[in-house]
Image (cartoon, rainbow, N blue to C red; front, side, top):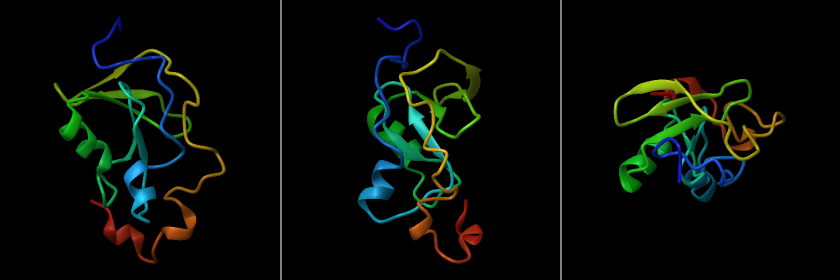
Length: 115
């Protein structure tokens, strides 16, 4: 049983990058991790906005930043930021991974494509 609804501390992240962007040859600005199932999706500033789409499709209410140096959580249900428990490692994408990323897919003028 989870101490906080929507958070499962034992589930590892799905990988180093946005699942959908990786499958569709897309790119992301920042990454977010579903605290319930570990799905990695791109942030709402990214073209795909896959973290929010994941929440809309699954009803999983909580994400955590998947960026190095960030440990905040976001609850879609009440639009709140909060401090939460440590999730299963790794805590963020590889330090060597570019932001935005992946480096070989980020188009020229990417700043103009952010939301």
